[in-house]
Image 1 (cartoon, rainbow, N blue to C red):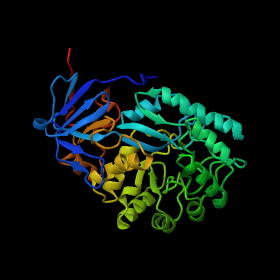
Image 2: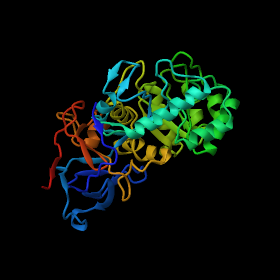
Image 3: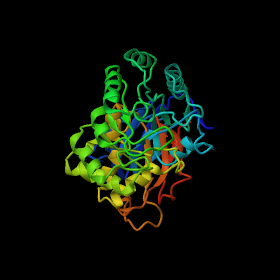
Image 4: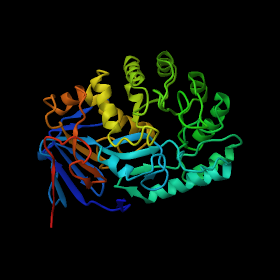
Amino acid sequence: MADAIVGEKCGKVVIRNVGLMLSGDIDHPILDADTVVVVDGLITAVGKEVDCDIADAKTVVDARRTCLCPGLIDSHVHPVFGDWTPRQSQLGWIESTMHGGVTTMISAGEVHLPGRPKDIVGLKALAITAQRAFDNFRPGGVKVLAGAPVIEKGMVESDFRELAESGVRLLGEVGLGSVKAGEEAATMVAWARKYGIQSTIHTGGPSIPGSGLIDKDVVLEADADIIGHINGGHTALPERDVCELCERSTRAIEIVHNGNERVAIAAARTALELKCPHRVILGTDGPAGSGVQPLGILRMIALLSGLGGIPAEMAFCFATGNTAKIRQLNSGLIEVGRDADFVFMDRAQHTAGRTLLESVALGDIPGVGMVMIDGLVRCGRSRNTPPSTEIPVAATAH
């Protein structure tokens, strides 16, 4: 397993000759810039090369007129330990997903652990262990925000305080444990929010043994921060209920790869009609019964643009800046002070689209030419995407 050294510094990095710079900001998705300067993992300048200090760089990346985009964020994954998933008995799934442009993953619960403890002491211990382990281990360099306990009956306010004091910042999907009633869930979600723990609720039919139907009324009453897989994971609520959730709730609208694609498009379109596209975020909900999806986030972007008619540059924001803002991350946007997590992309070879954005709007995924995390190159041309027409070139000073 590829292990990144946590805290490794990149020094000064200059990225120049960018052909298209996607900001991640849904209000201004395309930047009029061709150069980014990074120092020790943080962006220090964004603009035209003539206006940036590009001297004395340790690494210079010639983007070769390709697209620079914030690293993609998968808002909904189910890790367990290391870069292994018992769900599909597969090794290396996180590092492989990095080849799909994903630089950050957020756990919705370590639910696939064989023998997952459901007693209160055990579930807290698992969450704290997962949080600690992934804080120290980055498969392929990917930042995995883990340690998301699935709440169970009998938990009290002090349990949430203890979790927060131990470093846990997430709840696993509400509804995957014994707490399924809206009123009971709302009490625990409020406790979690009080101590700075963000919550996600399961939406739709059951996905694994022990889970159950969570309908729109439960979702609204529980009032979790994230309406998890609003398009079902896998089975969606009726489309009218999903649209009602978008309208009546003010919480994040999470659309996932492992859900109903028709409802995914309906939810995204409804958010646009309601003039709240900033609430839409993307995840894979993998690993799951349908497997591991290294290109799941790119495929969702292409789906929403190609079939949903959503501008490609906006769809990329769903998987970058929107998620970063809702999840309170320092990544996801190309602006000064943000983490230098990037994916370099170009139109796939032989796509019908004349540009990257046009090709995505036609339903084709782009080719990934390079991924950087904290300013460090983590992969060159992706082994998983179709080959990009052009790839960037990195040169390191000696």
